[in-house]
Length: 413
Image (cartoon, one colour):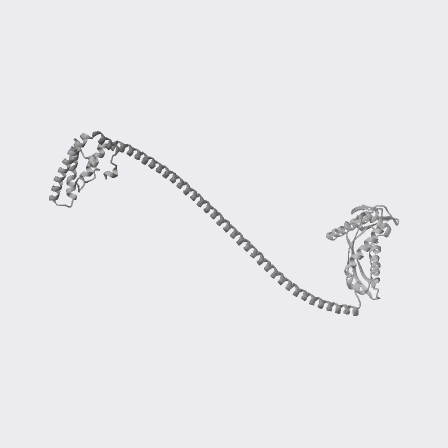
């Protein structure tokens, strides 16, 4: 029983707390504004000025009403929008999504003009109106195929233009339009057309692929040819550079060789010039020495070839003579030079020196030599006697004759 009472007391306490909260909320007017919304207030059906931010706020209960107006991004979906084309074909857009946002500063003014459900006027109803306007001015081909890709952007611009013109504070960010539903027969025809277009597109793509393949192959061959050409050009330039360098090197080497040869020639020329100068100096010295020797010999000969020396040489040569001839008719060229007085002693000594040579080189026998020597002695004595007589009689003319005619070396030989 005690436990049952305790549980009943807990339930009663909870109920009392809930009743207090409800009474406080009802009588004190405590309320909450959610995040992403602003609070708009009415009192007695009249819109109050201003708005509140998210959080807890107070209001007069049963007198003031509050509404949370969203000011963040929201997507309004318009469904099952009928549309009649200019050709009279009825089509339907299953879903049109409009992404929009209400400006917080314009929330009060927008709600005051167009109510809390402002998006019904400027989004839902406006989309129906603009879609019908678009379809009525275009054919099914244009709405379904040709201009369908631009429908969403055109619709967004139209809605944004009207919202700005009426100062709604609504910003249309984007619109997504689904493909419209068309009659089944028309849809099949379009499907067949699309199939044919697809086949044509496939063929065209295959042709394009083949063309691109050929172009790619040609491009590859062109690139390869250009590459080979560039490589050939680079190789040719390299070879030309190598040839130029080699030619320059050979030219430099040739120039160095020429300069070396010129230097060698100049060195040889200098050496030859020095040698010639040395030889010239040597020849000059030899010539000077020879001239000096000749002068010395000439001076020595002048001092040497005295009359007595010349007569001595004459006697010596006469002593060497192998044959002597005597007679009155003999030439008198040597008679003036025969020895007289003291000169006979020199002649005898020279004759004795020459007699062995004569015996050694002669061709006669000993008897002939002895007879010839005796005859020579007799002739010599006779000549001495004649010379003495002549010298006594003609002493002065003989001396003058000796001075006028001295024998030369050729005469002596």
